[in-house]
View 1 (cartoon, rainbow, N blue to C red):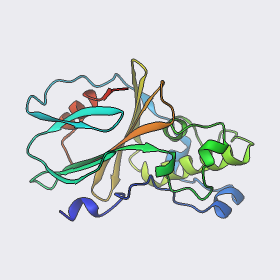
View 2: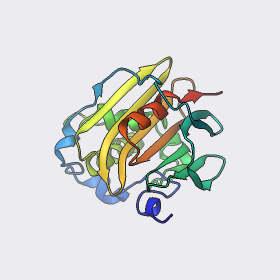
View 3: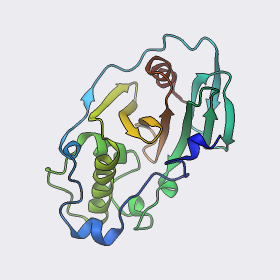
Length: 214
């Protein structure tokens, strides 16, 4: 069961750089991917998972394959491990769950939590950044993490009925996919999903099953 605990399984979204270096230097995001934007693709369609169980957070529910062992379960966070050492992490995230060098940076800025993946997937380091202190910090934080984690260069956005799905194929330790789901009616939360090796078809069905419940 230690397999899924190797990387990025704290309850917080990663904030990789402290405020002094993040705001003082201009080379905060130097990877090639820092100047690429996501491709839009059709929202996934549920085509399987006949044998599935429902996983719920306070604002979302979705289907995952059966026969997994719940390795960790709280109101907002579920970690499931399967026999072949694949797995999935599901977590509902609010501002308090980010590791921020500036406390409550979202609340002090014009950005909301849902803007974090939007910046990661749709903005680049070549674009003019915000001039506001807090906005600039969040902008750079999102793009820095984009450069650190989006190493495959394959990342997408899909939209359906007020739900935006941000999907990056990655190679970060055992993590093969990072997904962020936002909803227009509640911009102060998002759903974070990390895939640990579930096959693409199965994982696509998991994403297709996501429902916002409030």
